[in-house]
Image (cartoon, rainbow, N blue to C red):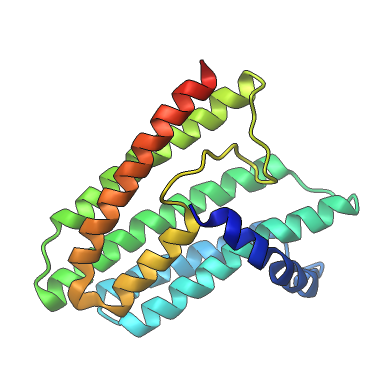
Length: 208
């Protein structure tokens, strides 16, 4: 829901940061890999109840994830070699790995440290599964049928109530408030489920 507005605000500063990082040893795939490693580190430290460390790793991970695209576009604009297809594939795969493992890490840490139930986090994972299936299936079929939605990203994304911006905020929130992480997770699972239903309906109608 907030991704379009966030991109309007962040595109310029992220572009400047990408320009500063535009060096031979820095590639979009390496930034994606850095974001993946930091995200996995956030999951591990959350499971160990090192909440402040997990929050920092999570936010820096998402910053790295936000910089790989601008850097790739900057290099393509000047004709530098690269493969947007493989880069986009790596990026979305890394995102799914980070989202899933951080949910598991927070669930473990909140259960150990605050006696939180695990089921709200299981609902989040289920909602992520359905939501991801809906938009990835739409992207694939839209590409094959010539109905691609081009917003500059590698995949055709159907908008929804729960997008990347909301995910960053919610994952930060339960790291800030681990004693209430299960409540945050339950509310988030409901929102992601609504977004998944919205995407299923919108995708079906768009492809008819």
